[in-house]
Amino acid sequence: MNKIDIACIIDDDPIFIFGAKRMMELSDFCNSFMIFKNGQEAINNLKSIMLAGEEIPEVILLDINMPIMDGWEFLDEFTQIESHKLITIYIVSSSIDPVDLQRAKRYENVSNFIIKPIAIQTLKNILQEVSQD
Amino acid sequence: MQKQSKVSLLEFIQKHATIGTWEYDVELDSVHWSSETKKIHEVSVDFEPKVESGISFYRIGYSRTTITKLFTNCIEKHEDFDIELEIVTPLGINKWVRVIGMPIIENYKCCKVQGLFQDIDEKTKNSIALNFKEKQLRQTFESALIGMAIIDLEGNWINVNRSLCKTFGYSTEELMSLSFTDITHPEDLKKGYKSRFDMINGKLDDYETEKRFLDKKGDTIWTQLSTSIVRDDNGQPLHFVAQISDISQIKKSSNKVNQLLKTTENQNKRLLNFAHIVSHNLRSHYANLDMLLDIVKIDLPETTENEVFPLILEAVNNLGETVENLNEVASINIKTDNIIESLNLSDYLNKAKKSIAAIILDSKSIIEIDVNKDLQILGIPAYLDSIILNFLTNAIKYKKPNEPAKIDISTDITDKKIVLKIKDNGQGIDLEKYGEKLFGMYKTFHRHEDSRGLGLFITKNQVEAIGGKIEVKSKVNEGTTFYIHLNKYE
Image 1 (cartoon, rainbow over the protein chains, first blue to last red):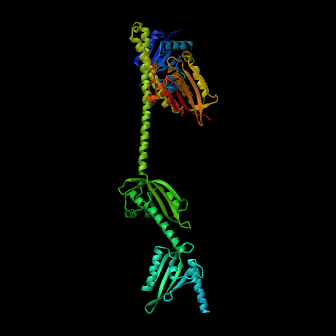
Image 2: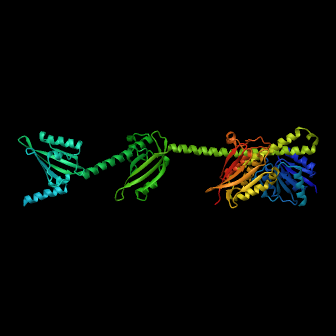
Image 3: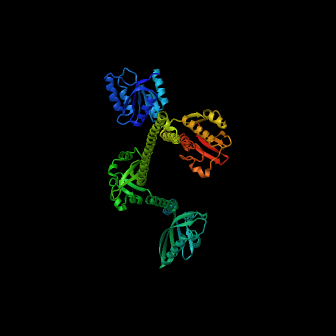
């Protein structure tokens, strides 16, 4: 199984970030991380990385409920940016509202809707899906 | 010839005016009635009247007393009389008559009384009936609890009743001195203008509207105004008749009800929102805890080998379950737009039985389904699944400790309903003690290891969401039967 080069976490919850990071390390998920605390921060940074032609993440774990710019708004903006590299986006939320699930399905870039908590197994599954593509 | 014609003229008049003559000779004590007089009395032409028999025709009471007195006065005091009285004919029919009597005086003595006798029955009866009707109408108008008015075509009062004056706080005189428009609320002046015009022009007979007026104090009075137009025989408009009922109270209370409804709706919305937010936020904290515990297990396995760690794990798991249940409750109430469809009851029962096959096998339970394969009910698929599953797992969960559960499922069918009966032989519920709490949130009745108590609450909500209801009969140590009323699909 190929290891992911860069994984990106967009979430405003420091506990989740800590946990997700640790789990990624423990499951040997990726080589490096990019962490953003909300959609706006993520858009700004990802845009300039792309413009500079630097390495962009392969996988994004995206939260929905965030201040300043939430997950949906991030998706709306992010899908406007053209990219040469395929980026797989997973929505990772504690919401079990079917309305959110339906909404996530409307975005082509969104591979799956993962309900928190995530476990080591969740990350392993993601790794498998990504390396298959 | 002259006399001949005079007599016949008199007879002619007597006959057509239904007037007869009579005469009493005092000295001879003899009475003479003309043929018309006899006819009015409804006696034969050869009837020979006497004073006593004549008087005995008058109705006992006022009529007889009066005629006796007048007749006596006429002879003794020489007073003539003209009176309307009632007689009773030999056939027992009451009849109004006019009797006129005049004394003929000779030598200061009354020697004769001459008089006329007229049948005025129809006229009197008509006028009495008319009087009565008029009085009745007047009283109805005056004492009606609804405000009534007669208004001329220009909008001036012709007559107003007590109720109307009371509604607006004016005396009759005060109100009569004002016009209809004077007391109309300024914003409602134009209301009904076209209808009034149409009524005058014969295009409309009546109209109803809600209209505001101002009372003496200047307060707004809400009324229901019904106006109709009265026309003469040629269709020319004469005046309006208006009924004005005070609906201020109704208006006020309906405003209050609306306000209350709005408040309740808002509160409900806020409550749902609250439930949603709480369950969502709680869920994210639970998810973090769960994740952190996972990390601890892998990262710091040495810290898990103690008595406390498994308890923390359990507590976190319980938290997760509680949050999930809360979320389910909140989502039932939010999803009111779920589409109700026709579902095959037997299919759903068998599906549920299959899905818990492992538990059934494990607990050695027996489930017997005796339900017609063609029965269709109205429901929401996910709800029906959950309802049936909940009743089945409950029945197994609360079986008697040393006896396998036996569950019988059958139906009662009525006109529009299907009653699904789920009967078990389990521990039973003390309904006297717990009946009211049975379907409450977080109530449990059995000291069972995984009693959560939310199941029946959710089930009840789901049954109600598809238009049904649940009834229960139970005896401790004998078993419980749940009756689930569902709507039949036809």
